[in-house]
Length: 377
Image (cartoon, rainbow, N blue to C red; front, top):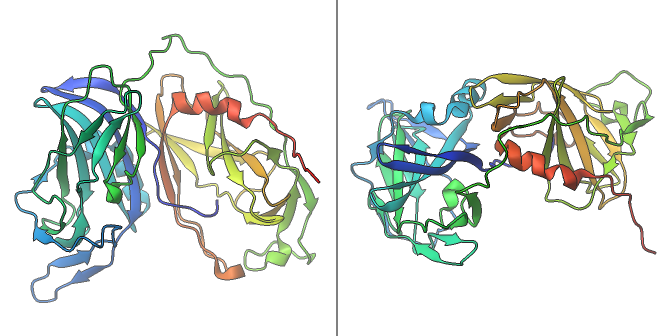
């Protein structure tokens, strides 16, 4: 697909107590790896982290006695699978826990080099906000002490650092919060559900969703020649995509049947003719690391660039069909590797990894009802 941003969607976890630690939620996102430099004399590698949006803070320090997380890949198995496929990205994971009478936000960084500078963790803006009561849980401290400072850290390349932010314990009635002020981990108002609604233990398969399937308008844009990735004149032109009400771009919904899994993705149409591509190496992973292959894109070509003709301002849904996911799965990871560059407009697309809660995807089904275009003149 086009216009990929590195982001993640929250993976909700069941409450668990392990060695006096209660886990509320966890998630991972992936960002591009910073440039790595090698000192030919010392053989050590260094990297400068991406610029943060806290550049006005000039205080700096070197982080000391940083904890190393040895069980990282057990806690985040989806990261191991992704790192095998893509080497140009860095995982940024987090866990929200209650331990030692405090709420602790663990921010994990897998070291891209032996020394990383220009990191930033937390400041006076860092807080948790209860979405029902409005109660604000302000930051107490960080470990190591990097509060309100950019910092440098040294460790073995590949080690996973456990950077901790401490807050007061959450109320026992707190269900939904937002996390603010941890920008490098994508937390600038990030919604987090820490206590989920209890659903019936009996689950049922969905019926096959009925979507308006696109149709072929023209076999070639302008030139009647075999498809050529580097020549947009040879691309197909599709039309009559499934229209929906406006949604945040790339909102998703899921239907599970015994025969297949249907994943709908909501997209905004910015142009009358907009180009897209869905590649066959898109896949889903469950919590055990089992892969579910992409079978088709309903009504659309696969592994081929094409134009979708509509109207600027349309919101459309594309439906990806995968192997069937069992009802026992509660979360999936959507993986879309980086797209192959092409000469038309010099485009290339970065990859995407999204960890998705299946119940939330199921609840989103209603958002994808067909909604005919309404034009007011």
